[in-house]
Image (cartoon, rainbow, N blue to C red; front, side, top):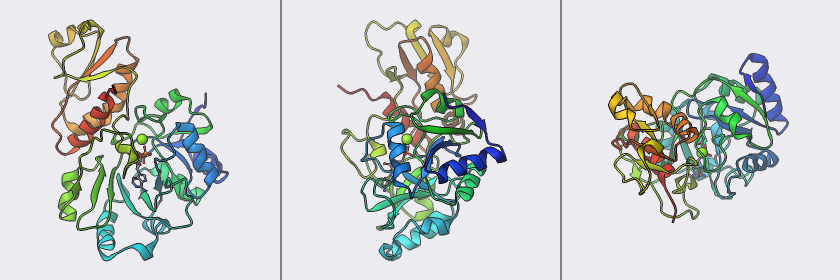
Length: 333
Ligand code: TXA
Ligand code: MG
């Protein structure tokens, strides 16, 4: 198993040097842990896809440390006036959990963008990752550091558990502050288009951009889409997951149920279930978001047969929380 290395100055320098060598390293971000590799090196890109078992049609996000580096990944000749104006607005969220999709620079490896003519870019807001990017002197491609289709990692321990093949190092920067992935928007048109709900609320973006195109978010099929992260089955635990409002399958007794609630249940409410945890002390959605993936993992590791989780209103952060829970609950066939 790859050891977990606390993100000391020496460890950061070592990670940067491994990345320059084309190796892949797990890094903390403010959203979830990422599996980083040199975005300009096709071999590093291939190693990322292999480590995750990720389908080759699902492009990666590029992480840079400042706006100028972001622009080097973009084909500026392809930017129309609206894209330029929207980019100015988007920049105010950097560093932070907003990913923008823009026309790609032609010298980026094709694998990075899965052959698409656009590239997803963000400036992450985590001191460890920003320092790793600076010292590696490269843009870093980084998907979430989980096996494809499993729950995203929000601690270094989560990354270690997965034993991703080819991973050279896990940099530990503590638990992720947001606990949910970045919000992804495609720039262009009258308003940007929301491709993935995330740590920045759609309402906030709608305000600052004066509009936001929101498509139907949970897609029924796993065909190649504008943002393959929208594939309906994603973020799935091993055990079937149901909403607390759903009917459990016949024959499942509450003692076989791992119950996840938004806020603490009373002792009496808890007592029926085989396993129980609250995702926040108060029901506050930022806390639920921060704990969501870690709690789903714990419920998945319990000795119960199914997970039963509270839904929340799909407003503000609730949109991203419900998006992740719906995908985790998706059962095919
Ligand atoms: O918060 C995050 O965004 C985390 C951390 C590590 O930065 N990263 C992350 O990466 O969530 P990943 O690979 O798990 O999700 C990336 C999403 C995928 O849904 C992918 O389809 C979409 O970004 N994406 C990447 N490039 C794209 C592009 N050119 N056009 C549309 N969607 C794109
Ligand atoms: Mg992911």
